[in-house]
Amino acid sequence: METLLRLVAGTPLPARWFVPGLPRLGELPARTGRLRLEVVSHCWRYAHLMAYQLSSLVRFPPAELEVRMTVCHSPEDRGTVELLEHFGAIQVPGVRWNWEAMERTHLMRRAIGRNRAALASEADWVWFTDCDVIFHEGCLDGLARALQGRSDALVHPATEWVTPLLPDDDPVLRAWHDEPGVLELDTGPLMERSLDRATGPMQITHGDAARTLGYCDALPTYQQPAESWQKAREDRAFRWLLGTQGTAVAVPGVHRIRHATKGRYGGPGVVAALRGGIRRLRSWLRERRTDTATPAP
Image 1 (cartoon, rainbow, N blue to C red):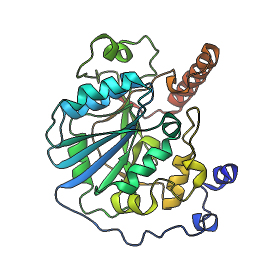
Image 2: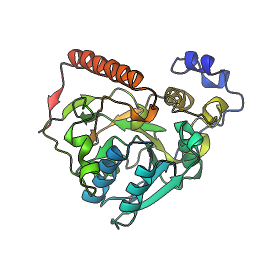
Image 3: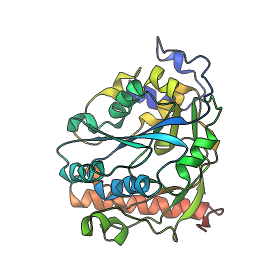
């Protein structure tokens, strides 16, 4: 079934042909005023990246919307637990911390945590993201203004600002280990990139759509626990179920840390090195194709 879903997800074929009983969204309400946003993030062995994400909420708290910061994690990941304990003790205006502890095998399939959060959320909008995304100055308030009166099922930032592909020994990736605390990312080396769809960490979903469909709740194959981290192929399926690739909206200050080594997969050193080499090659090829990239101001 997963193979079939991978083939049809993202195609013009209607999801209802393959998912019997798929709930209908209907007309989504366009809300205005002080909106409620739930940010849903995952962290497994990436405390050094999550530290920047949580720091951005402390350094640039929202003034024009309420944020509930949900982090799905496993008690087995002591580094992340210690990070969440540190930030949980910090009171931030307009921000509520919500740490969702999960069994490791449930955390390994990102859709499980996203699905639980989506179905239970009380927010007007839900931002499904990854722990390497940073909400820099003006980001959340800019999003609040962009979402006023919108009834889209799915939107995404029109652009993001990304770091170069960082090696393990880069000071950016060592900062939390060396001096735990509220971190600040140097924006000088960042490059701007356009986004043509709501990719996995940039899926901002209408709250009613999230509560109706969950996150691939109708696709059992993406709700199965796993022993090791699973590639997030369900992101395409989620957009397919919603029937949209997302609408681009102007959101300032969306930053993302790119890193060569995928520590969450674990495995032998040779395999990890090979994965890192492939990521660096893909990044180099992508950058050569992206002639419109510009440095951060």
